Image (cartoon, rainbow, N blue to C red; front, side, top):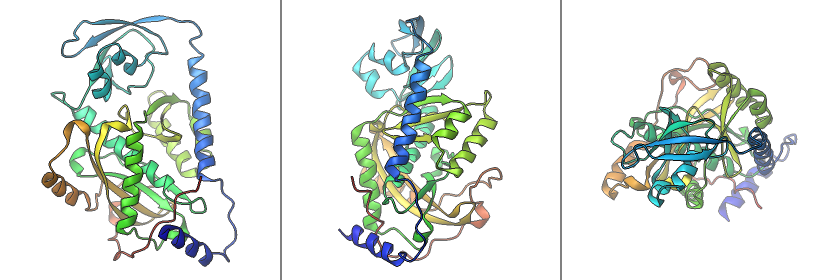
Length: 345
């Protein structure tokens, strides 16, 4: 109830401001997901008849195993379902002909396939994909945390190594909320939002699209449109990769893990002010997580969490809207307010 009271107070305080008509967050999410579904269906229709491909599996106990799968339809996850329940539950990422491959991305030719998990001898690829996925999950929670009259603009997800101590998601809130600082209760609310998505065990669907499709997906966000243009310019074939989790569609700098249920311990540890940037007051949300296969003792977790509250900085980025390190400012003393209540359904 307190969150709703604060929201009403903020709304009254700005009642004299000119009304800004913006689509609801649910409407934006629905539009983005609809374009994703339409393009996904179009790509699947490129394979009107069943064409078989050979998939040769590699890994402990699988060397030389041959699966006959359907071109343009079957995914590495489909292959895992032909094996054991352990492969289905533990597989987080795949290698297709030696290249990192999302578990829910269709296979388009005969290939070799390795299913990767957090228990591999060299889990570096999986760990990086996991860190990236946790940041994507944090962005999804932030977008859903505020009522419709307050905009939330997600900036690019910083590509950080696991050794940075925290995954990050940069964002800009509605200018009306520039003075807002999260209370402990607010942080707990964000954590609950993440845990709900984890409990739903939602897949991260992958879709490679042309820039025109991606621009349509993000037609309500000039910030995201610029990110699409940047990623397309850096891509070898001029395309960009979209991911969908529930009805939330995002851009990513690399592959994500198979599903939200791979997360176990997960906390939102801090929200720092970065200062004024290209899109307004930039903030950096940070978090810490471990997958279900690698849970830590509570004493170790406390130490990791303490480290994850400290502001993570990164090299100056000249080609994006991110705020350079030189402009980073320390957050002011906390103000015990609550974020606006989530959109009512």
